[in-house]
Length: 590
Image 1 (cartoon, helix red, strand yellow):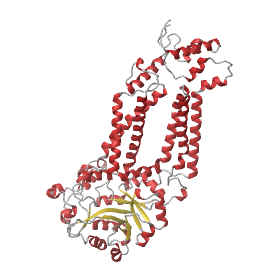
Image 2 (image 1 turned 180 degrees about the horizontal axis):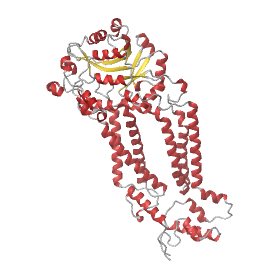
Image 3 (image 1 turned 30 degrees about the horizontal axis):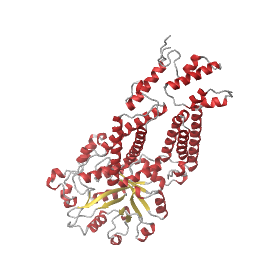
Image 4 (image 1 turned 90 degrees about the horizontal axis):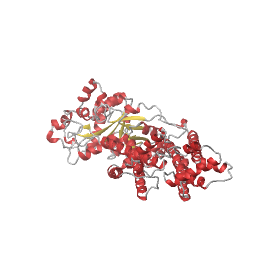
């Protein structure tokens, strides 16, 4: 009598066909194998795992580097001369490559879980090789051109470390199912021992990982310092063109405590605000002075500079993807901006009683103000009427002379020096990149009464880490975003973190033990059942790899008939329990 196989069998076979078909183009049943993976395919599995790990780090790097995307685009502009958002193609290819490699990793793990031989198709091997090569080239390129940005990884781990640890613990705990299955099915004791030792080593390492996790956000709530002041770097360049009056007005609306700008000196000695060496990116100099578009910005007199439009480029390039959300009136205001002078900025700061800090760029050789640039700038500050204590003076050249002329200025260094040296030079503030000062450095400077301002801080997670570190102020291109962070994103006491750590480890350990017991349930049951006799087939079958071979089928049938003889159950029940169709024997008629 022939009976159709249960629907579950067809569904299982369909899933298995999709699994082996997508991974190795083995769609037919006769193409599949339960044999051990060849050494060549094992090597490709290692390459796949290495590629996945490399892409994971690459993906994490670019995810956390979001704070500095504008810096990266400006760097590309200085190299190519054209303003493009270079992060878009990088993020798109990274997301596509990571998704593809992660999918192959999942398929490979599923192969191992069901005991199928790994056999990666040659097209996938080309894809994996391409992903590995392009990622390696990306690492090398970033290291050579933007190497300082690697510092974002250890800094970001201060914010994400505890949560990444929990995620890794969940993933490795879930892998216990796969490891336990491999150990239960393996016939080789050495293989079992090696797999168990490797897995337990990784698991133990994760259990103890919090000992190496440090974060300033793990602290007593009472020790949290006041919220850092926010200085609008180039105003609020996400809301209006950088270094324009409108940008600084928008920053003031975001409740910043200070304004930061980039200052150059015009041909006739007027300090004006401009970040780039040329005017091509942020003005319409190509239209007004086409023959001079490559000239240094300092080679223009103030009359020519003031005649240029400094807003239309913002509407055209939309560097922060914010133009579409602007009202029509706002678009008109943005489009009518002109180049701003330092005097205009100082008068605006005076009205609102806000601090001003600026990066002063010396004119090129041959410029009329090459030797007088410090005095020209200092003269504008004194004539503007701004209280001297509101100005952070950063140039090191002629600092003593400046101190004599304007003793009230806040002497600020852009170089990280020991507190003792800073005090000897009469410097009370530091202006550093956020990667240049560790939490310990910040605390040391704070104890020495040296205020630290870190730039450029645009992301809430970075702002939170620096807040917990005790920094006094940050310079940001995104005051509109940071104003929405009234408290650190997360803050927990050491006792709270220790409790989470111990609880996670105990839960993980319990789950792992449970999985190993469940996977080896039949072996444990046989050993504890008190049976006086064991069939050789029982012992061999409990350790055998699940294969569809004839020998294993014979072994299963012997075990079934043995248990029927012992009165364990009916033949039909035992056949179905062991994966056989009682009537068809997996499609073979009796």
